[in-house]
Length: 257
Image 1 (tube, rainbow, N blue to C red):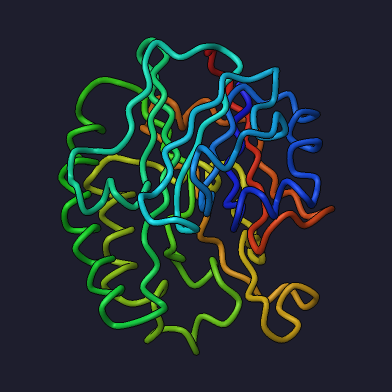
Image 2 (image 1 turned 180 degrees about the vertical axis):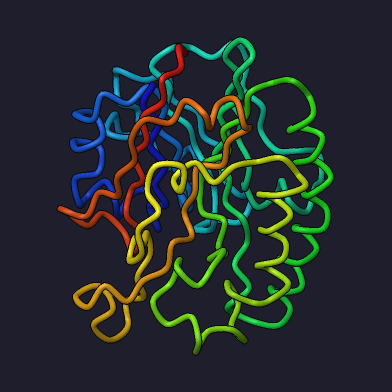
């Protein structure tokens, strides 16, 4: 089973840069995308509905903002949009495709970098989401939650960790939340099962020479329940071509979808 997650920073922008031509060549079973910045009625071009996939979008109510989607080769048994909290769901941050006992989720956790208010929204979402995640991990289903979590977990996960300890995305409270996610909550950072190396990043600021110098952050994850994480076979971050300020994360699992 091959799963791809990619923050597109605008699906129409990524489409103009060749994302869909690329993704149809990757032999992925499921592709999770985030930050659509588009409404479904703005995606009428067949480009956004690749014929080899069943395509599902959950846009934000606010135009030009957020939004998530899933492309699945096999038709899901069901698709769930949102988690039942209006403030969270209006921003288009969770879509879940269910295949038998497997749930694959495209998640876009809020960023807090724009203002103190948005950082508090991020903390509120984290507080509300953690009990839900614990329930999922204990449910007996296999979960794979893919997407932009907007948090670098450890110092190895960003280049300038010393200078970012007071910045959104690497705050002590955020890292402690990730400790809980990958500890008591019962989930696994699937990428780190097969790649313990430093300098593995999925996002680079557009300022300065961050991309050229690989001054990045690893904030895009595939987060798995333990039995699923045990089947990880390979992971790579695709950087040969840029579709966004994020890079797609491609992972292979010895798991029958």
